[in-house]
Image (cartoon, rainbow, N blue to C red):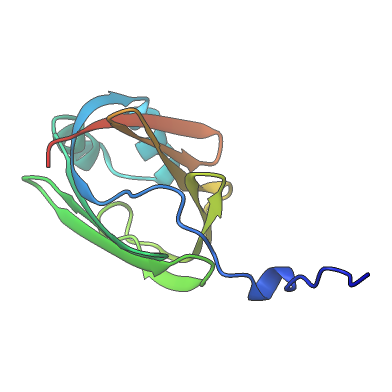
Length: 150
């Protein structure tokens, strides 16, 4: 009887569980003020940001992602490959340099950002026709929901 051979965890091909590609418009934004305070964003910028209605355009090719966030105030682009740590400047937010790594956790995208702020990162997941985003910094969590438009 021959035993089954399995690849070590690091050599296993990743599998795409969910297709995040599309255009998504924000419909809900909870606790963004406290989240921005935790990031150290100034009062005037927080007031402007609280009035914005971001749109996300996500392009996914297997484990490679480009996430573009558009607003009338600022635009931001993040590109990454699952499991690869990248140096990122958070220009759309607080202009800090962080080391970011995104991994699959079941069907969720989970990003851990190491840098000046503790417990920083985000989680994306799709539930029905909604894209959920939880942004974390220190002890604050901002919860956003987007609806697919394209």
